[in-house]
Image 1 (spheres, rainbow, N blue to C red):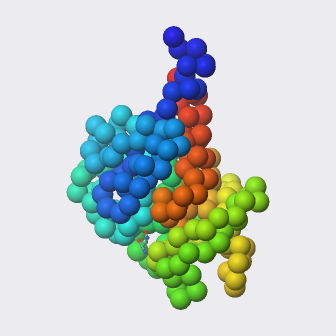
Image 2: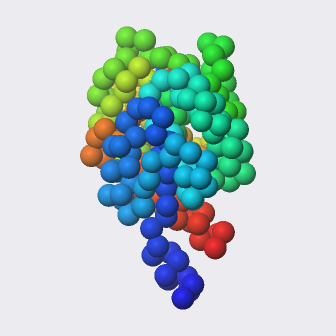
Length: 209
Ligand code: GLN
């Protein structure tokens, strides 16, 4: 039964870290995009997943909650060894290399630096047009979003701000099995990034089957 057709048609099992933030919206978005999504609060749940979404919220609180649930190191370890991960807003901060404000919420896996709450008044909490690498444009919701201040060599920019003073600034990136966005794609109907992540998870599942 394990021919390539049946494997590739299978919905990848994607966990959504359910410590705080808009995890229910991520679960819905992933289901819409053909994944089998589940909330993750325990190591058993994490181990039943092929990929993981780290939602927004407050990155220091997420880190503390992960520590409390004994998930901090296991999660970091699984992502470091190839589990596809999609971090949005605070989730991107957790995946990142360094936050220049000195706060330590970062796993150091995604080769970008981020500045927490880095948009100040410019794009503090707002709906802003972003453009994807393929040329599509969409409205994105930013809520006290991190600003990407450095993009490492192996990191592709997936979306940039397309209007105003910040035009051209990167707001979504991908580094191999890691996808991250400064905004909240789960709060709009644009499914570009969720589709991309479900595809990534499916490819990874195929390679390991
Ligand atoms: N400002 C939050 C932090 O630094 C992130 C905000 C969000 O996820 N919407 O963790």
